[in-house]
Every structure is written in structure tokens, then in C-alpha cells.
Image (cartoon, rainbow, N blue to C red; front, side, top):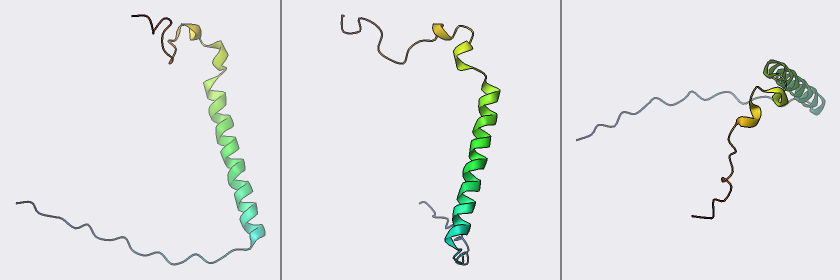
Length: 70
């Protein structure tokens, strides 16, 4: 009744050659610096979250007051 369609497998990738620990640490630091820059750019675009218009009027995610009284 149903037909099974097999998808082709992924081609195998060649194994990566090992790199020296110093090179790995340098690349890891570079990646972290890039992430820090991206987060800083996104934070600049958002502005100050404490200065939202009507920020206090947003509903709380918690239970409303007197939720246990029914």
C-alpha cells in the first residue's frame, strides 16, 4: 500500500588532519571574539531594555495574584 522512498546517503568526508594545540587555541579565541562582537552588535540594536515604552505594562509569566483562591 505504501511505498518507501530511500534517500541517497551523504558522501563521506575525508578525516580532518590534526592541528597543533596552539593553533586550536588561537582559532577558539578567534571564534569567541567573533561571537562577542556579534552579541555587542545585537545589543546595540536592541537599545536599553529598561527604557521600553510601557515595559512595566507587560504581563508577568508567573501566576496571577490570588491564583489559589477560586
